[in-house]
Length: 400
Image (cartoon, rainbow, N blue to C red):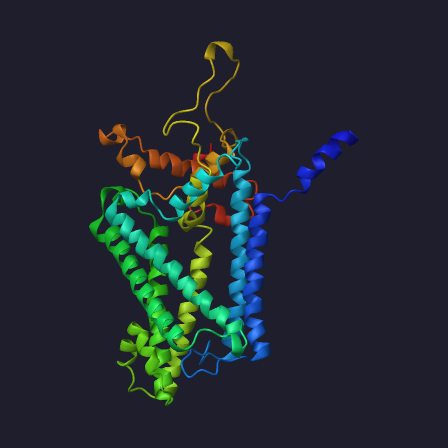
């Protein structure tokens, strides 16, 4: 017995995937909190005339609220992702280990997932998603770079002069690309309505697109009134011409008083932060999570079996099994449960289904989605975590 315990102890001490999610989320949350504390203590500001004052015009209580709520949301999101990972662990074993033999191929598959190469087969949908996805990543990078520069002592600050001008241009161009992509997605889903989308639109799609659009619009609104307020205060901000959209919009309101412009700037800033908080709230509990699960699914995919090949069935004459296939969530492998969470609802599987094409009720996408809903609703921690019922509907009726 002691020998068995000793044998199992290394594995028991190994971090589990859901624990890694919590550690990562808590780490990012703490880093965000510290990034707000350090500049407050040091008071370091750039001495260059061409730079942006971080949180310029934003009162202290609002900054305190920002650095309190955002870390909390990051930690909360990591806990929700951890719950989903624990749900995958209900599945049967499936050896998907990364080895020296397959690591190169797996990294290539992961890159394909990150770059959405499968989606790019549809030129319109691929371009639209690329505008949203890569536009958002650049905007996130722009914000991160600003925060890093915010931590630096004056001698090490780099976001000034021509570097800042280029930074401002990149940020505005990315904002235009991102916002245009979201508008295109809204028109495609609710006006153009391609068949694959028309037969499966959910309320969460409207929430996601609405929040993304609000992020883009509120970002430009905040920038517009920030620049206009600095001009009204008598500051020379000609370098902000490189913020091409914000500068043009600022000229439309430069007749207002300084107090009015500052008030509007603060209002737009608060709205922008709220939209980002909403994004963080939606990320782990809606299909937005496929930003993480789809590349992971690609990374772990099986290359040993030909694409589309079914697993071999046991010889029915030589087995005493009472049931075949899947009749409970635990009959899936953990990788198959991950696959359910990686579904993007794109409908490509349904659009090429011969039975569906002949008018029969078979809908492969619906099978995947309903299986995922049963997985969520029957989770051991679903009772204490309402986020496991993705759309607020009584999914228990399909779990009988």
